[in-house]
Length: 451
Image 1 (cartoon, one colour):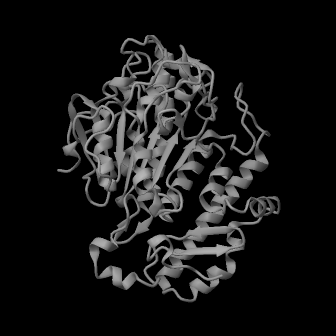
Image 2 (image 1 turned 120 degrees about the vertical axis):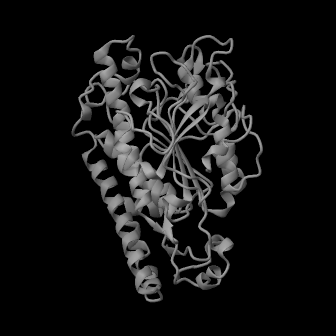
Image 3 (image 1 turned 45 degrees about the vertical axis):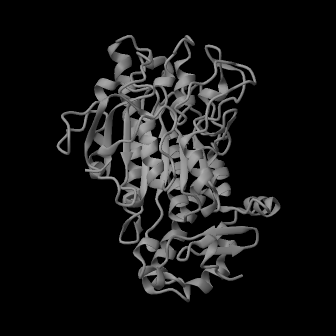
């Protein structure tokens, strides 16, 4: 087998091929076409990637909300872990998800929050098979741009959740368990097992027998492309050889972490929360693995579009790592109980810590003349603001990355009250190159993303 440099039109993004696998590579300047591209900056610019990370159950907004405004804003108690990466992201206030409100449909804020989060639509209230929502922003991008990559998009999550039945006051479980929708009645199933996500990203789906044989022998995907890798390395300059070696080390590290998770699954169980086989017992490890896989997916240009659902809305997960033994959803209804509020604050901070790690890793991954993060937009937020109030205005929203130089980070952006969250999605989709002027309940764009 030989390395195929101009794979899928990506002149500097080669692939390694072997029996049953195709492994995309990061951008390598030594590959054929690199010098020609360097002479045409517009063509040579790395692609922009987009990810949306969903947090369930709202936050303790008093501990989340930073002050004052502009570039000199002070990080709040919950957002303190962002200190080392604050120059890479914006905190956005004033966004509203109006169609997550009841609007005559009664209770069910958790289901509506997840369903509307990326669609901006009012989900039909039903617990039956006649679900109706809307196409989500990520799938708008996947439909228009997904042909440029091996996978149009990747959908990750930390809780599977049922796809049918009544999960929230007469709303189908499909609503509270999914944020990505390819059609009004068709959510995109998320991948919870990091091992399955790895195979989806880097295995060859056309050869399931080879995948299973490799897994049973605990072989690395790198073993199958060793010959191709050696031939490619002989053609690369010193800098690209180092980059190739670092990339393959990262791939192998993730494989080993996934295998350890499979070996350890079931040996230690969180109280009242059974862990499915193949998923790390430590929730932080589960989150970090998915973030790292998303980074690799972007770095290799396997896909440019991803969603990550940290929990289903209404999740009652416990957090033994941070000594929170009561369920998240239960605690979110704290009714101003100081002890419960403190536990919610710890959960909120835990999620922010994991996100800060992801942003830091993106920022330290070189690409072109900058970093991988420079060519990304990673939105982090939820469809509920204060979990106790179930309100859907002043949503907790972060946006990391520069989107190829079209976003100026490091600021607190105050949008006018009740600015539709979908204005942010229109702004992001346009930066992806999608020909959209409106989406969901949008009423324009967020011009303040660029100073």
